Amino acid sequence: MDNKNELAPVCLFTFNRLEETKKTIKALQNNYLAKESELFVFSDGWKNENQKTKILEIRVFLKTIKGFKEVTVFESETNKGLADSIINGVTEIINKYGKVIVLEDDLETTPNFLNFMNDSLNFYKRDENIQSVSGYSLDIKKDNSDESDVYFQQRTHSWGWATWKSYWGQCNFDLDYLRSYVLNNENKLKDFKQTCGADIDRMLLDTIYSRNNSWYVRWAFNQFLNNRYTVYPFLSKINNIGFGDDATHCTSINVYKTKMDILVKTNFNFLSFKKNNYYQRQFLYYFSIIYKLIYRALLLKTSTGRKSLMIDFNNKLKINSRKIAQIITGTRNKIKI
Image (cartoon, rainbow, N blue to C red; front, side):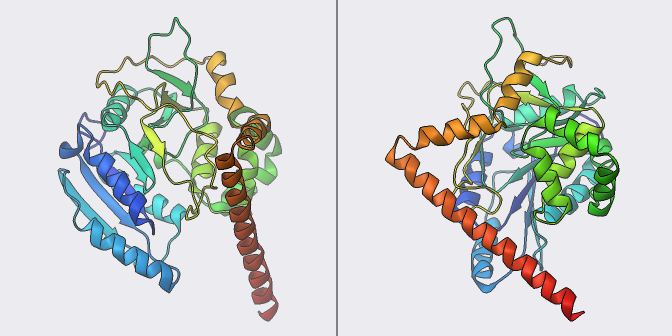
């Protein structure tokens, strides 16, 4: 079933956060199209006994999920990590259905999230400028003369997204390939940063040199190289609740807070693709060093903000300590060999 108007299947990727997973599921169950949608849940495996206990608790909960057309749960016997879990899981489902909507276990959705994602997939399915759809949006000030509900950006986003089989199948996620490409095309890396944000070149380098393991930046780089765009709603359909002590891929501070869609309408005014420099400048500002410094400076003015900064600092120390330990362990193993 490819490129038809059937509802896209929903893939949800979970790890070891039970409360966030419950909130994600509850919000998704409240979607207007939930009962008509198929849900595929991918539960990644554990690295240690502490994670095992938490993941087994989550799997008990996953077996109780109702409120959808059908629910299928995949339980991994090993720890794949988020990147491989998403790449493999999305590939399996999208090869069968031709399109897919993807969520992680820390994303609350508005009731019209599935409406927006499915309608966008249907409206833009033949537009070769569009590679993906985002349910999340930054707080972008809309031009008074703009009557549409969407805008376009070359940088994609991973907080509730969708795509089609034709584009996902074209993406080369192989790290050796990407490493070789970047080494031989340094100007592309500079263009990537200029077009998609001040933080994204480092994100890509950290991934291809194994300092991080991000499927997202590989997907984003592919979209950039092919000069394609993401459709964003002006009113976000996603609230990320994953910022905290247990966050695996986020810090404790969400610098990308946004205004949620409280209108929850189900009929959207879509726009044929066109670039808009006014929205582009606003969008890229959120990924600039200046914005992040100003945001953190404002946090210093309140006790809650100062506490968040301290937690964030401690979490980054822990993450860096783990990375250093992994490097040392890897070096020792090479010496033994």
